[in-house]
Image (cartoon, rainbow, N blue to C red; front, side, top):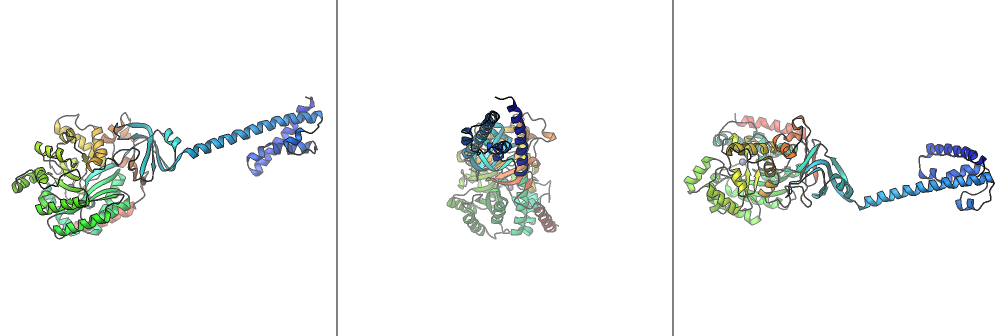
Length: 541
Ligand SMILES: [Zn+2]
């Protein structure tokens, strides 16, 4: 190698680099600008060589000593450029092949503490859930989900808990419009002096639509993804529920006296059949038959309701043994407990959902164990109306499908299932004088997988598992009142509120993200409800 060589080479190299930067400035940093071709063009021009730019031609050319050293230097540069080029190609092909191996899915929720509620009650921290269409396809660590799936939409749930959507097993959705209308009264006074008169004057398809929109907004905002309902004009409730994107087991009410949507029980039964036919098979709506209670329907209406539910294989929803008064009335008229009377009519089985079941004897619990209906426990309503205390610990011991409900907002007065969980736990403790009764994990079970069992849907809902429907929520866990976090399930039950829910997903569809509800116009829903309240005020004046 000649002594001059390196100097000339360095000089040329500087020019080459200047040119390269110049090219980069004008044409952008493409791979082509950094290739040996650009370098060769500068080399040939500076030495007035006639060699072509093709490397194989360059190798066969006789050159001076200086030029020879330049060729060696150039070949080293070529080798470096070539190696870099190949390395970049390798990286790109590796990334592309990795992406090709990842399954494309619609949604991934990642980074939160995932409380699965699966059989092992597994908590993955941090975890992630992959969703495709309406269903969950994987639940794992964020790294595993990122390696296996490519999502169209990703929700960052860091600092949050991700859990199955809450299932409210007992509501009368439109009754949110009677919220706070009359409080601090016994059930019969409350019903007969306020609720029934208000309903007689104001229940209409319009009232039901306005009320259900308000209820749906409240449920989405507080983490409820499915609810079991019983009211009038249930087809309007079903339409609004579907529009809002919620899941519902919705029962058309059948009651002996004339009401807004039916003058007679047979009219109510006919309307129920039309409702069932219209919604059976809907992905979000399960139509149901809902005879109001044993004391508000005669034997004939109750058995006809049961026959209708069996004919279409749909659930039957009924209030049962809610108050001591009910027990007295049924005993007087039918010489049986409400639960015994229900069984004698053939109304009780796995497709039955009984609401409250507060006043039951040990024999009644044996009937429940034999027939395995779903039970909806409504601690807040039972406390507010002083209806009594359901024997929840006995139900749990008996292995009965036990869900949690709020009841209508008029007797609660909200639809917040987090509060219902907390009250279920506290009420069981004070009722049994046992602080270990209904611990946080059991209260959470009641609001998730227990509710799914009570509705006969635990194979498809109630936990975060591959193959189940994608009904889930992400809940903030970083508020002052939630700090520090030792046990997320404890926090969900004892300090979390509906307002802490950030994201609500039903059937794979995001209904609310970062507290922005996507399926309802929040301001319009609240304005319509306030406007309708004027009619309610006038009705009870
Ligand atoms: Zn009720």
